[in-house]
Length: 47
Image 1 (cartoon, rainbow, N blue to C red):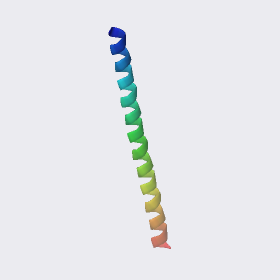
Image 2 (image 1 turned 90 degrees about the vertical axis):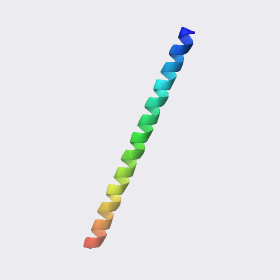
Image 3 (image 1 turned 135 degrees about the vertical axis):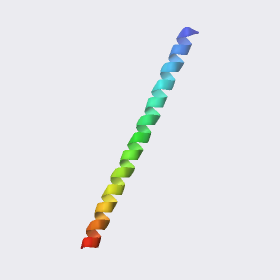
């Protein structure tokens, strides 16, 4: 029972960390795309 509980806890921690990493990656990708789009629009407006 103790071993099973430990395995479940480790599994949940890994899943939570993975979800957090995925959210952070999506956030960074969105921010980078937004910055790139802003720079492109700015260049187009200046030109």
